[in-house]
Image 1 (cartoon, rainbow, N blue to C red):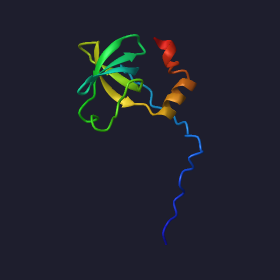
Image 2 (image 1 turned 180 degrees about the vertical axis):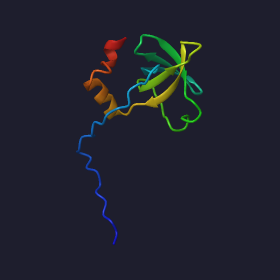
Image 3 (image 1 turned 135 degrees about the vertical axis):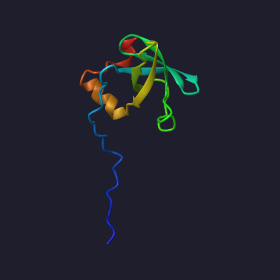
Length: 109
C-alpha cells in the first residue's frame, strides 16, 4: 500500500526554527558586494568590513547574493579577510531578529 504524503499548504507561515549562532571567533555579517570568483565584501557586526571567500566544499552549495546574512570566520593572520561558513535562511533571520542577535539591517550601518 502506497503511503500518502501531505503536501505543504502555501498559505501556512514558515516555521521559525532556532538558528545556529556563531561560535568562538566567528561573527555574523551581511554581504554588501560580490567581487567575482568566490570572493565578496561582507560587513560584519563587529564593525569591520572583510573580504571573504567561499571555501571549496561550499562553493556549489551556497548561492550568495548581496544582503544575505552569513556567518564569517575571520582569518587568524589577517583580520580584514575571512571565510564564509553558513548562509541563514529567511525564517532563521526572523528568529535572530526576534531574539535580539541581529538588528534591522538598515540601522546597522
